[in-house]
Amino acid sequence: MRFLLYCGMNVRQISVFLENAAGRLADACDLLGKNGINMRALSLADASDFGVLRMIVNDTDAALRLLKEHAYAAAATEVIAVEVPDTPGGLASILRLLRGEGVNIEYMYAFVEKKAAAAVVVIRVEAVDRAAGALGAANVRMLTEADVAML
Image (cartoon, rainbow, N blue to C red; front, side):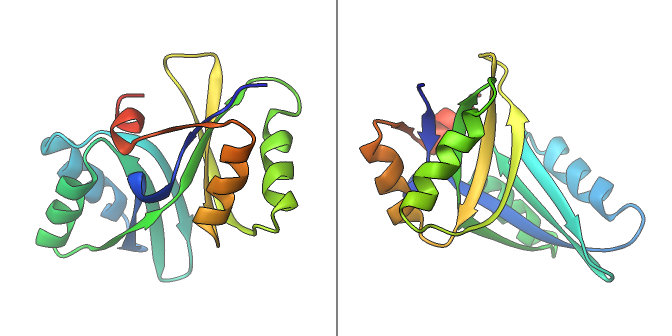
């Protein structure tokens, strides 16, 4: 089974804290879209007073700058994104590798890759370096943030 891994210092996810009010998500998405920022993957989680939009975009630095200029609370964090074959057990094989290294998964979300019959799973872990080492030792090819932006 072959996997592609986008990880380490080269891939950043943006987290944006949004007031839990009608239109706040639409406003943030409009701002990004009107400024040429393309969201490659996203997840939205909510609490009673706010939501957290997590996304991978085609230009992380520009998106962060733009969001902050418009008074959004936004920050970048490192994540791992793994291309998983669309077969039973594909995700489980990645999770076994991480479990074998004692790496805890904080959260994850997925999206479908346009160029292949595969899904990409974005994983936030406690120990990115340890996770990357385990997956690299299993001959997982690592790509850059630019590669992810082109998916």
